[in-house]
Length: 119
Image (tube, rainbow, N blue to C red; front, top):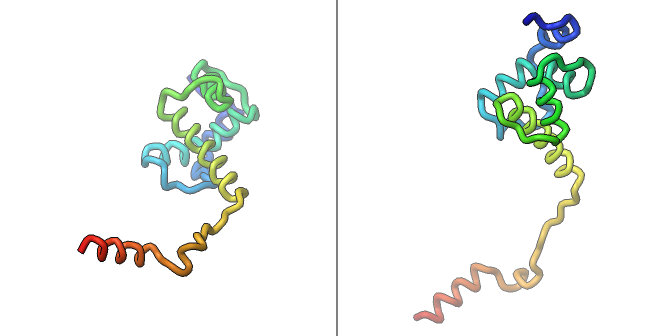
């Protein structure tokens, strides 16, 4: 089946930017997202309409209505969730935890004392 013209506009685009860390992705997922990311994004954003049941299912996976089962669905879900996680991580406050009791008596001192006790 030949893709409609509105789909081909996005299918010819490659090198889709992840806009998140690539460290959690397998090489086949990275290749798929790089090659078809623009098209998938247009599909799930409603810019282009689905023409197959697989495309409708991909939209449902993106919406969280069904669980992903193939490489395309899993890679896209992983990308969306990673972006969301990184965004939340950046916006969450981070605190440096300092145990005030260790300022005068460190853990290494404690370990030394434990070893002396056993002598």
